[in-house]
Length: 315
Picture 1: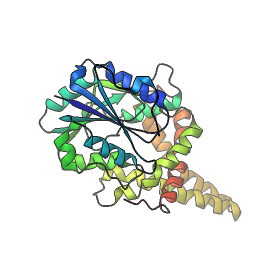
Picture 2 (picture 1 turned 90 degrees about the horizontal axis):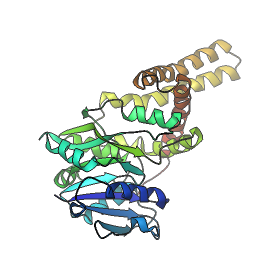
Picture 3 (picture 1 turned 135 degrees about the horizontal axis):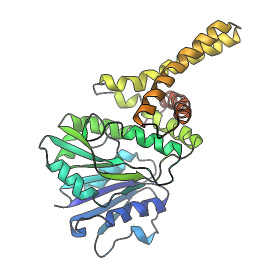
Picture 4 (picture 1 turned 180 degrees about the vertical axis):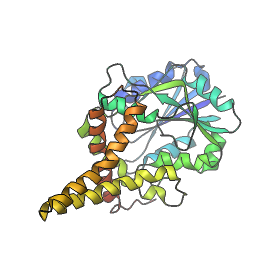
């Protein structure tokens, strides 16, 4: 039962090397695994990501203008496995990941896609703890979407779903897993875990990344039904922008009451989201850090969504 790890990559080799290292450390026969690295670097020089006697590692070089979906889809054409394991290039898997995820996938005939929970690094800053808490809001249950950091599915499921959407720069994992959801259950399991080595550590870094992540927000909803649970992620940024503008107009026109009302309504969803996340995190993250997260997150998403309106992605 061959498992093909498909890893899209661009940039830093040291995190990719740690990702490959965690695959080499799996409690699973190396002869039944292979790694397909689809990179937009011109060369790969780190010996840790070269082929080893026990594990087949293939390098596929692609141009920089291709989307991450294209890299993943191309990776599958070079893969020989019955199962595809899609990883980001900055993921450290627990040693039992393959054993646990294949067992979880095979234990229920209605399951078509599985993923392991996120785990923090030992010295994780507040922002990493927040991201981990958000990822693990619901565990050991069926979910509607899964992030693309670690996914395991049968090759036939991937084919039936039609692959990743190559017209999207971001949000491609939500689009793809939503299509897979139409074929069966998506299961988020705590029996294995991963560390997101490239997780945001600083708020200013997060701000710029969220602008980038938000650029395909509107494109990602085209051509698919939108569940009610997903609507807040699109509507709340609009709410924040609209009432922030009311606040600014109130200040410019010296209508203090209007400005205060606008500010209060602007902050309302931010406070509600912060209270909810503080509860999910079980007090492991300070409320002020969570509030700071959402005050940074929503403006970045607004900017990213607006910028996405002016970008044309050629398929």
